[in-house]
Length: 48
Image (cartoon, rainbow, N blue to C red; front, side):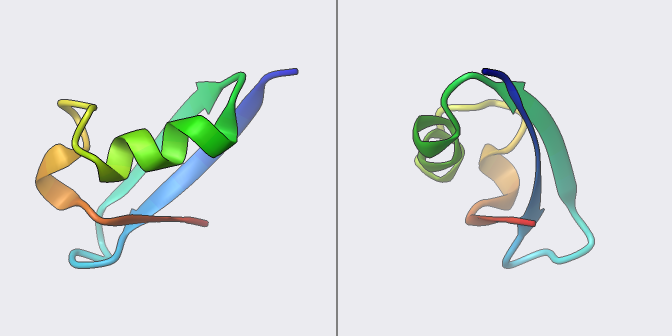
């Protein structure tokens, strides 16, 4: 099953990111670990 998700930066609350994944439990920690070029600058993220 695919999931569509929205992340909000904890440090920069006006920054949001949306994505899609088959493994949400894996993907959100990847964003917070800096493994995505598009989201690394605004980490940490929380799931909205």
